[in-house]
Image 1: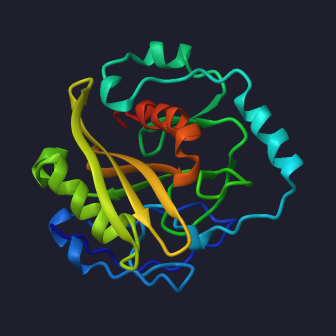
Image 2 (image 1 turned 180 degrees about the vertical axis):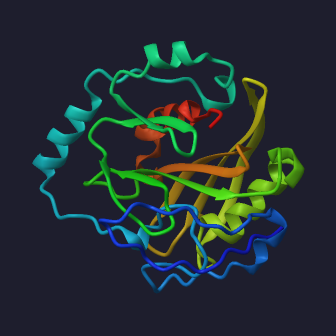
Length: 248
């Protein structure tokens, strides 16, 4: 299962974002070749890569104060595989400590932790990251597709394994798929999976959810450094659970 996309030029920051015209098919996935030495990869990357984000230097006191601020009022969410059926109203009531994002053009919404900052990265529709821990981030990509349902691409395990290996991590990183499952929201099938990607100097623990709707292939990916996974997993599961598609 492979994915080919046309190389796109970086767009000027002050111009309105234009959506790529390339039609996406997972069967084209092997055609993507990621160059981890460049800022912008060949093709269109699905997630924020570690090499695209530099971590600012901070003191321990700064980090401690920042963590205390982000932790204030946070409501812990249940494990993502057990919480797919919760309604939008229930999610809103439990979103304390998060901020909402709604894209009326592409037809999706989600929430992200309070304190994360929006950044612009080529090939990404939306990106928010923690300025202290840059591996803690969430990104959304949207591509046209001629498929009508995510299940048309294969099983959750098959699709997740292909995306992780060919798109969600550079070839130089060792990856492992931990879980993959299908769930239904308002009659639409979503695949959600958990994986780790190991680089020489860090390991990223990540969650992704993918869905096809409105003639588009949507991917939301969020994650954190493995050393902070225990502290961040509830927040990140909340982010993944909140991702919803609506008709446009």
